[in-house]
Image (cartoon, rainbow, N blue to C red; front, side, top):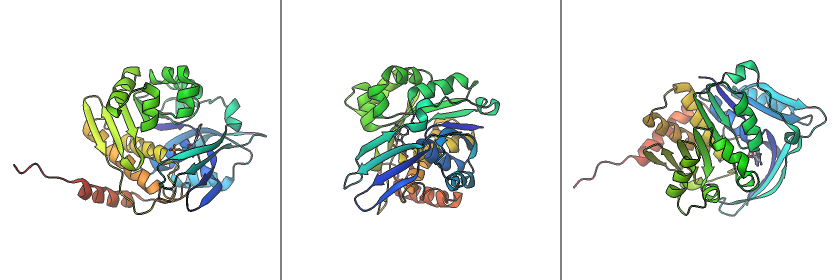
Length: 305
Ligand code: AMP
């Protein structure tokens, strides 16, 4: 099944308690598509400026991403984002967001991209997500991601997006902000009432909650000794999840659970390096080994009473 992602391709400047990187390859569509490509070739639609390096295009192509939808805006500067993490890496402050070429971006999907079966509207202005929705034909499955910037600043457009998608990926704090609810279960119910049948609430090192119709599933995060850089973990989760679904073509609740575990494991690889270092050279065997370790870690027998 063909898989399309529209989102940001960026240069990120990231500070952790131990280290920092300036202008490293990032962006919601970048992390998503590199993770997805391990399972199923995704097509990326985004815009960059003249300053975008050819070696970064190579990194995405080498990972197996179809880059025919990458637009280069002459005279423009690539989107930039800066963030600083707390000592325990569980919180971050956004230091700056420069939309640059995204301010005037009007995604134009090719005839092939319009036919996509699975579509991921990665974190980007909701108006751009809507313009993509208007162009796609009749996809089997559409998911979206968002962030506090749009929940607070572009709420009407975001609600319009939600009314048209099958799934929403969202952080726990954003889920509460979006709904005004006090618990994750209540927030998920309210989000489902806004449109998406499937709601995935990401909780960083505490894993993710998957609300899929009547099925509620908790997937822990794979425990790691050291986290280098959490940037992109959410997009990488979504990339693993949707790449796996696109490859298997199986949307049953059992397979959606497996997809969530794949997403969680991909996120664990992501945070083991800066930028895309943790995921760009992964193999399926790396994922299979971690999946087996995850099964051993979480296996439990029935109650012996
Ligand atoms: P995550 O850590 O999964 O929330 O994703 C971080 C990525 O999102 C970074 O690589 C940023 O470049 C990108 N990003 C941050 N803010 C925005 C925004 N307002 N629009 C689009 N992408 C963004």
